[in-house]
Length: 603
Image (cartoon, helix red, strand yellow):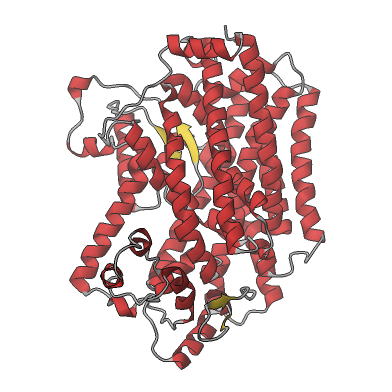
């Protein structure tokens, strides 16, 4: 049975937690004082393009596994059962597509900011809009991710709230601002190991106290927590096999395909092959992380059954249940509570540090550099470091603002679930409906699903009887959160096609093939060349080899409004204006061989 007595840290717990912060800071200082000492923007923002796939993969995982997810997934499993586990099915396509479509294109284009692509494919206005949207949502997101775990920790253990917020924020700002992306990646590796250790410790000891994993499983079966496969195709059902397996793919594409923090890690790889391998390497790691979260939820149910700490009044919110459970299970094991808290804050540190670095990269590449194309390298590097420092301090301010919001996690829904207007509409509409006492779904919301890091929050709401089903706009508000990203993508594509049709579409032969991947030509490779030309919609890919075409297309000349420039001299002027970073150095070996992609020059 849960205990109403507040649980406290021991000296050993504080020491372990402090060691996490010390080691993270040391890694940052090491990379600030070694190697190139972060003297170029290439090294500071892209780790000198020197990383191998293993640390990149673990860094990708750490960014995905935020502190809110560590608290949210076990609570979701405890309250609603194991159906959420089917989300793992979406990881297959959700990583294969980025590995073979997004990563090769971004890597060969030699980008620093993903929003540079929007200018290459469309125009400056599109790039600017995407950049500003990303900055807006990430600034809010940072405050929520920093404040939420500290609030839960304070509520359960009495750990000083603002002491935790300030310590985490300042340490993270330090190693990000001085060590650059290389420090961020290697601290992510260290913090990933801490996260695995903390979760395993809780699962092993909790299962032992419950009588073993067999008893845990039997308890879940008796409590109807082991979900079967629900093939209901209704997108308004919160969780079904189709919703999680296919709706989840769009979430994964937003996270691992175009998210700035993740793409920046791909671009830090020493070769395109290493970048692609990182996508494959992160797949089993994600499955392990998902399994650990689900198993922790089942172990928690085996301990409390239906008498949860939330129902007993020992905690005030579902995201506090996991911390209460951890302190309850590990209270007789000095040091292990500190290990799990280190695990929790490792998730927060990895996510926040990624946000700082990615914000500095997009601000420098999209807002500063285009206006000062002849800025010296040393000055550009100094400004990049200053931006990382500034965003770190801003994060602390956003954490304070988050503390003034009545419900942090529900505020995060309307502010962070997506950067698109349609998602704001649905999220806020759902939120207002819940506040009015008319709720249609108990939703576990994955934050920032379109363009930012994945975090999770569990929202408890009053269930309406089936006979009082929602209609009209309220029905739209009850759309499963898993489909938000897919819904937004569909709206963007449909509206974009309609506007293009009404205003006059771009001719296919004017589109630079380096900005479009011929997916249908890949999938339908067995068709005659004449049919594949039709599928290309007029885009001029290399006729002999579509794989080589993407490389050859990079030597074509492109105007800033998204079409090919016919005059090579015009390209020279454009290149000088946009900066060398958007146009990696290329050379043709000879007319009979493929283009050789050379290393990108520094910013």
